[in-house]
Length: 294
Image (cartoon, rainbow, N blue to C red):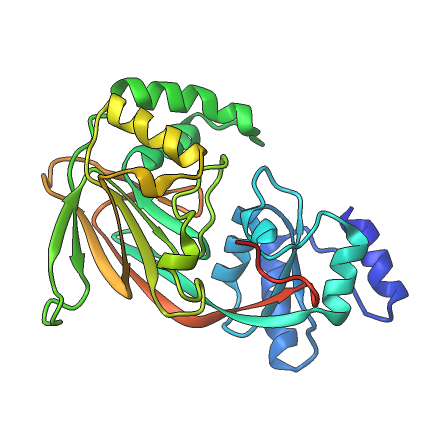
């Protein structure tokens, strides 16, 4: 399909090239953008591929995607279809959005994210998947890590503190599981923010992250959470809290605990982590006549 997209773009009058070396592709995109000669760099893959390109390109470099991954949450949110003709039309006639990007800073360095960052049970599942991974994955690849984490995860408490300790609303909260969203997207049909219209203003364009935390741990509480999340009725969970923050710090209450972190569905190391927002960091090309999906 990427080769077919190159041919379609040539037919539309664009100069296009298929580059399989990600480092080279991003380097060339930065150079062409600086020279004013770049329409877009196309991420042929899933959300991880898009995130990797954002992390390797300069601010302002226009990006779109040919969704080919296991999960294509960003593409689904903005109505970008797995169709070469539609992607070519987006490149030729699409509209450009300036979207916020989240940033995570840990002892290992900094990482930008487009969708979400979390600490707790799902991060432990991703950690186990990462350790066991051999090559490409499918949805079935998650089954073993999910069962293993459900049986053994201890739900160590996580402290969330506002980034600005001098702010008027400065406070600390503790929870066993937290997910912070730049865009209200999550894999596996789990809907953490189904009431986005009421709780969010312009997700991805408001300079803030929407932090969803769950105040109880343990197998049975988690099963209860997952049922309501799958049903799209997260607002029925009495121990779920949502707040909007421009930045915060996550750390284990017990510093001896290794609490894992996941960033856009990939393993992100361990807490502590500082999280903030870079407003308008991402330039994304989306279909001209399709609005962002709820």
